[in-house]
Amino acid sequence: MSKANQPSIVLASASARRKELLAGLGLTFTVQPSVASEVVEERVAPEEFVTILAQRKARDVAFSLADNEDEAYLIIGSDTVVVLDGEILGKPEHEEEAFRMLSRLAGRTHTVYTGLCVIDTATGREKVGFRATNVTMRELTPDRIRRYIATGEPMDKAGAYGIQGYGATLVSHLEGDYFSVVGLPVALVSDFLEEFGVKLL
Image: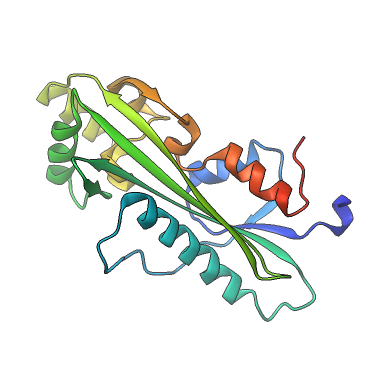
């Protein structure tokens, strides 16, 4: 497909990290954050949880653009959660919750799940998938955790840390996709876009 005939790419997320990762692929895109609910009422496995929300976000933006019949869009939706002992750890609501989360994660291995959905508005076709990455934290003293929280970085991130910032110093090692932990599985994005005729390489 020639660039002139390619659909417009829309990122259904307000996340600066996802925006940076997508821009790093050399793509031209716009950002239209989803306003869809992030509450999943039924109890589901983490991989299903993130794919449900990624799909919900992409569909929300696709619906909002439905009146633009003369324009074709590829909508990218994504969602990330941290899972420890089978429990999904979301974004902390306050500093004490961030402290409790990080204290639990310290010295242990948790799993980060990131769901991805790409929707072609011209055909209604959807591609949905996820990536799971195991992340092992270093042993952390209460003082180190407090200093990290004081940076403000944990407060808008699942599991109360960001691996691409100061949080990188808290991590011992990981097994899987680093970019998924940041918030967007870029290789999977590339695969999905290619299936819709957009080749990055």
